[in-house]
Image (cartoon, rainbow, N blue to C red):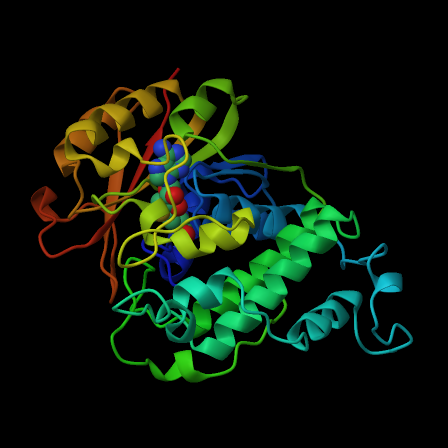
Length: 359
Ligand SMILES: C[S@@+](CC[C@H](N)C(=O)[O-])C[C@H]1O[C@@H](n2cnc3c(N)ncnc32)[C@H](O)[C@@H]1O
């Protein structure tokens, strides 16, 4: 999925999956993705033939997981279609396409997104209006999200169908967001794509008949409750950037509420503990240590950056409690296979670690 997301492993996916296969000799069994983000690695594992469990603290990631893992046949929207004005006799279009067309053609509404995240609405009360979206796109987003949440409330769509439509909406929103990568700030001048008209498209689906489960909690808590897996993949944050703050707008779309947003960038108010221990230098190492200690699996893979809070040697120490770790330095431009000479990893950005757990 082409979502702009810090740490999205889409570009490294082939490399990661190749190592998974080479090291474990597995293409089936249970694969757990504890910090699933955009779900790119989890979907890769699903495509290979694994049963998959995903988890993430973000509600938007939970929504993508439901769409990407739990939809395993062409969605029918059976309760909804008789209640909306679409041509259900169409021989060529699937119900999902018809619903997207219907949503794309809704009249605009001046709701939360227009009032808080577009210049026309926010100029009414802010001296520096926010410009995450053009006025028209923001009003369109409002119309679509209000309609999807109304359908859900009226039980015309179920939770999975809502997740699929919201995933389509988050992807479309991401394409026209006037940001340089995260929602931590908007750009002062308009990015070309932000001026294009928002258009919902199908969320990429892959149907399979494995067992899939999705969770939305702190990985360190979840891991204590999970059954034994074949492979656990760990991809925690490695800098101080808290994902809930950087992706507050997808979170609002996923949650479907109308929060009282604050500050220059229109952040959501905090609800409970959304921050991650992995984003604090003083906590990250202990959090990873505790997590690894509680994993019940034969194979553990970990992605981390050489710029991260936890040093390469600290990671090796932690993984050594389970077995003999291996690692590969992965440059975005080229892959350097196996352990770099003398363990030197200068200039490399992404590391992939692996340990086979010794009983
Ligand atoms: C580096 S990103 C993962 C990227 C993902 N592999 C992908 O390809 O998109 C880290 C993810 O960890 C999540 N996260 C941070 N702390 C967490 C925690 N304690 N428990 C569960 N998820 C957490 C963040 O919300 C974020 O989605």
